[in-house]
Image 1 (cartoon, one colour):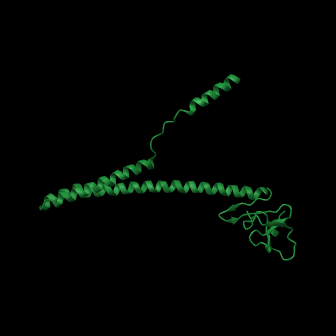
Image 2 (cartoon, rainbow, N blue to C red):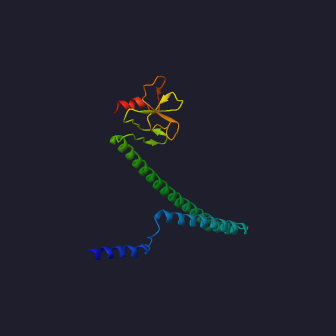
Image 3 (cartoon, rainbow, N blue to C red):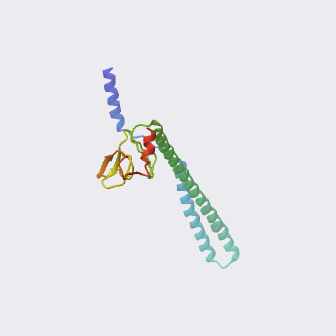
Length: 187
């Protein structure tokens, strides 16, 4: 068994240096490359058709330049633009999926934090306080403050001039943001 463990460890060390072969380019990358090439090619054909038509005074000669350069170039440029638009849309869909997954993960963490009831936890997301609990009934206030807060309230978090209070002192009112009396009632 010890010999197998050493061999497995040696294999892991050897495999670290092996580089994996990259697969083919994803379809969205192909659309970007093909779209870019087609746009440049289409504009080039339009310019060549215009140059050829501008150098002859005869309409029957200009028509061939118009068809070969102008129409074909326009079609290629439009096709390239559509392919680039397709690339852009696939990037948007991928970004939307990534953001949706991040939102689902964050909401799952918030749900777990709210349903677990694990002590004095503050789940702050985008500046909104989700929940705060004072487990032992003690609150905090600033040195000269007239409001008392739960210990994790965003207003007093990180301040060094806080003092512990019971919440029954005269002249102290509950914070309207963290609502310490509501958190005490849920304990």
